[in-house]
Length: 318
Ligand code: CP
Image (cartoon, rainbow, N blue to C red; front, top):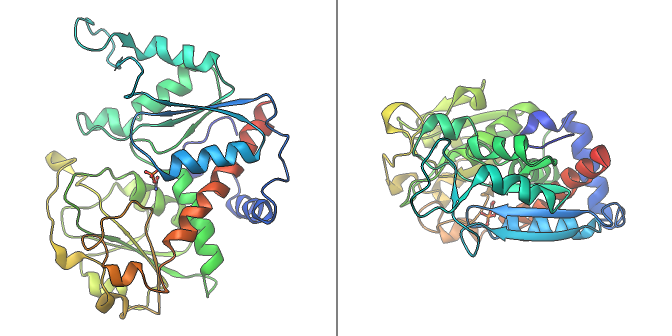
């Protein structure tokens, strides 16, 4: 694996899952693999889980870690080509990236969709510039269109909790006060489809996701009907993807909040969310605090997904 930006980079998914479970038995099994190798984790956007779990994964492999918050203490970066740089951004990303690459052996990048230009977002402009100009293996810590470390951890969690060979998984839109990217639902759908599980996506009309990610998933506009017989409910907000509404909030309808009545329609489903979650917008206190909520083990598995990816990047590139 040269870079890691999506499920397409992971190779055989079942082998990757087996590797994850083996690693989970003893996270220190490869604690010298990363000796004298440095991870540079670059954040253009805020993070709790990704920041901590990726550092922990690197430390488990014996790596050194540098974390850069681009918006706190670094020079503001210009990303446009041909721009006359007479504004508030003193450094161009095309110099900054190779400089950052020269200080490390592996680069992790978090850069959300900006909603200024759909082509730039869906072309993964920032992430691809790191791949092109850093000279180092690059992995996504959530980019504009995908969050593969999260989705890999989600799938590990589904494997650990599933009670049938091919569970029914419902990805449900839920309300949020702000405009959020489509990266998590895109990526979740892509990984669940790659595993071949039954996937039903439910959302209000207007929130259709890009078909390249949803594939053959069933789209159900009636949330109650979608929940019937579900084994897992994965809640997430996202903003509109299609047409001129790209990046817009079309609804804050709390009738879509996941609550106990809706969970009772399922087959005793587990509740999942990538976190951070807005309680009583996305999900009620009652559901997230219930025995069926597995959001904490799901977040804990972020260390495992990051460690498998870092292990492979170290093994395949050094
Ligand atoms: N789920 C997730 O990526 O969390 P953070 O934004 O806190 O990293």
